Length: 470
Image (cartoon, rainbow, N blue to C red; front, side, top):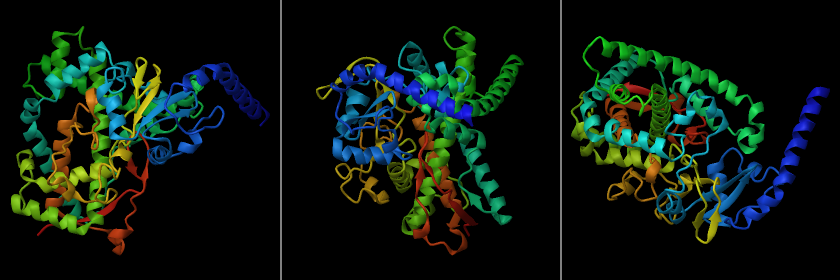
């Protein structure tokens, strides 16, 4: 007990010393920054922001304005909470704002320095981004693989049919334990991020715990890459998928694309794609079960367009406007990344007469903007898919009132693939099955509370009971 008290006292003294040493510099920088809430000594606004930063920052913005400064320990963060301010970071000054602060827990991933999601803008990031845009996520490449995805969804429906016949329930929190743990630990508030000089101590053991999951995932990917390379050496037919494309680039230009970059890119795609897709489908099914009339309207569109018993394929998506409207409305209310991924100023940036110094963290509160009555005057907090039927808003973030996949140069590179897969998942689940709530639960009884992490997940997982459509 005495050693614990001594350790705690030493930690407090260390933090206080650093605070006093840097106080003069902070006061000077603060004068140039946008206004914001007054924080506590040393801690800043950490306590006020709490466990639901998307909501607390939105409330703070009502008082301090759409461009405000919050202090999170040693980290100075400027928050944009309106379309106009988001445009300053994501479009007008996007070149200067391409940096990315890396959570300390994420550094447990081997070769995280070459991860496209976390690397700051520069030659290496541009190289990886160009590879994705020109060879991996092109329309031609996605079209070539669409039959593989169609087969995958037909298999998904068949597995679910068998489960229904056995009388099983479906739990929508089916994210693989491995991915879920990485996303949870990576997004958990970490004292090492607020006070960087504490990083070597890993006081919350987040880095230690997440490293286990990263190691398991990397072992899996190493095996997949090794098997694929042996297949290529044996001159067997190509799979011609994303991994083959990446290995082509490695084979002909190993100095341009390393195996470490390939594995890290696959890690990002697997984690990001799995978690965000599962979370989004859970939210949209939650809203459909809360709004039976919307569910009925969607089922009618599907029945009028696709024959009963026939699976929905990618070629059918353009003929399903209400399906797209339902998906967009769910992403508006429940964006997978409510604060997007934070940016970081790579140089001093002038915004609205303020000077944002190099190294400042930059956050766009997408959750706040997508519920702002200024942008959405018709009942902005309600689930109304019809608002998108006569709208030209798409997923590409050109209009900053709706940015579920981000915007600007750092928009999600897998956007096109994600939209296709989300549409197929939702369409097939609704077309082939009827859904009801367990134990006589009424739609209004469904909990819609969320919990904040790298992604915004349901606090209480959705439980739904499927029955076969006759």
